[in-house]
Length: 221
Image (tube, rainbow, N blue to C red; front, top):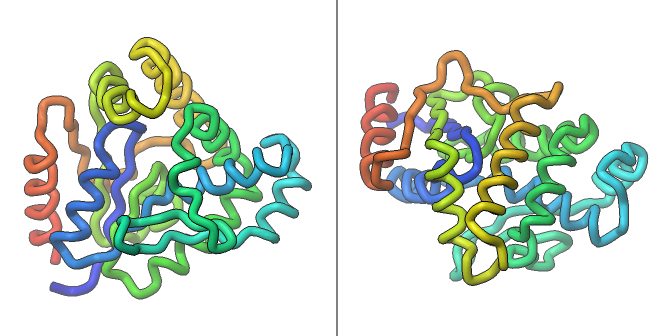
């Protein structure tokens, strides 16, 4: 099989992270969670007391950042200046802040360069929101994974129930607001690429989704 760049886009809670990791493992590819990179920027923005609308502050912040994803015995970890911040970037506050900074041109430019550098050698699965539309418009295989809002909210609620004190209704409202922000932003809105393979995971198991994706990849390669 020739080396490929595979993108998996879609809204929060659709199952992108789980599916992307398994697909990458099955193929022997690297896995890149681009949402974690935005969360890393948001985390450092908050730590420095900056506003997501302060473009000059964001520019200085990005020039000083050293964010990367590394695989170790714990899985894929997010590092900022070699400090593991993986467990600190999954709060509702950082989630909404990441959505806000993702709309800022200076942040997108910084991460666009970083992501494309990661994809040069191919054999990689990129998970995100604009991987197939903006970052890798010529990706070999593009997927857009979706599910109903209620199903996505329930999955996210179960995932973080022991870590975050939010009700299911609050999770759903936050998710709906983030969906609206991501879909309506002027820069790189959340939408399927024209040539993406669209999959609805509402009634599908993780294994079903992965198997279908593997079949699509095999047909392309």
